[in-house]
Image 1: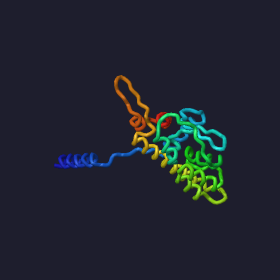
Image 2: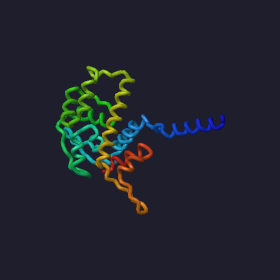
Image 3: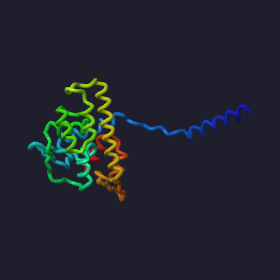
Image 4: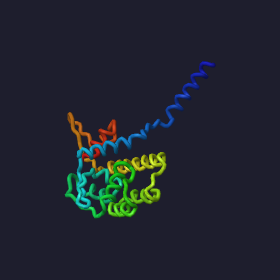
Length: 205
């Protein structure tokens, strides 16, 4: 009887295990790795699909990275694929570079509040506007642990924005075919093994 009771308990334990919620693995480092790779590609002038002229200086960028924070770039991304004509942005270079740093690094670059707000307005970038309004007065540095937390949150939100575009089939028209099997871009983006392979795919237009 004791053996039978033991077996019944074991079965109940197995049934309980089957109904348990599956474990979810989540890497908090993934967003920072992803955008670090995107920044490296930008510095090497790889996979750039947009040129922006600000006060006479031309900046090459990845449209999908800017689309994660800017309705202006999201509209351009939705409008058509491939390289588009260079366009001019009527803001200061410091304001633009502050927003550009935010897009790739999750923190604002150095610029006055007025310059950043003007850039945020031109870009349609509410998160940039919110970030500069929350920044300590006088461009003082926040505590390092608070800064890192905020940066991680911003990068995570940007990556979520890119993933939402993926699900709409926007910014991911790469398609691989081998031995009669065709793998669409959004499938590759979801199953990529590391940030490098994923960013190379996402930035392909």
